[in-house]
Image 1 (tube, rainbow, N blue to C red):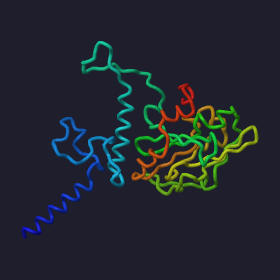
Image 2 (cartoon, rainbow, N blue to C red; image 1 turned 30 degrees about the vertical axis):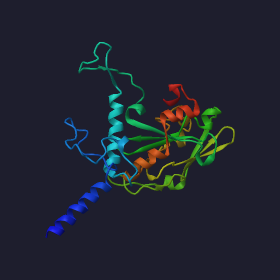
Image 3 (cartoon, one colour; image 1 turned 45 degrees about the vertical axis):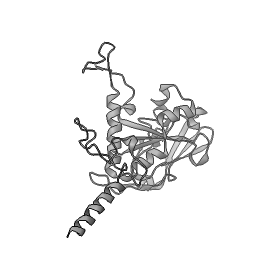
Image 4 (cartoon, one colour; image 1 turned 60 degrees about the vertical axis):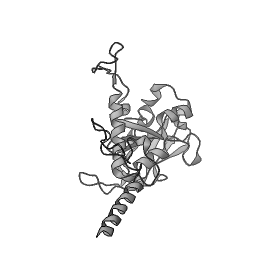
Length: 256
């Protein structure tokens, strides 16, 4: 009986050690903090170690934390209120994309120079795809004459409240082809794994939206990745600050 209880405690201890710093603590972000002085779980995403796959709950928490940070960026302290609990609200804090999405980028897709795309990830996992400011279409100031979606994209159908049944994309999957005034055609790919939720039908009749309003009305498609792949997707793409440095795009107007 004693031996059985001892083995049970040992197994539980081994399981806890296996999870050490690979999962987020459930208590660390509470107002009173974590009550355990010897807690083996990570107290923040920066402490998570590569001890295995990050759990779905941790990845969902990643999205929530990113959303909270974006919301907190709307507030700044006044000069005379260093220790005051009240902060001053700043109305103009950037575009709608800055407030609700994590900006990510894929550069030189399939080793094609300057064929860059953006992936704006919402806190609900939905990813908006489009061409990035560093794309050759912008760099060479080309005029888009047509956008031709793949037949599988045109035939895509989703059903129900959760939008199930969408075409599955891999990073190399072709979404559409963009023809320009110089007779050059660019292939737009998914860049991420996920199910196609919708494509932007307006681009068929109004291809100029692709360059005129790339981050809003000129988006290409919306893709939903699996919850377990959120962290992997974000790690595989460039962050906004890294992309700005890569392409030397310091004008905020390029990202509106």
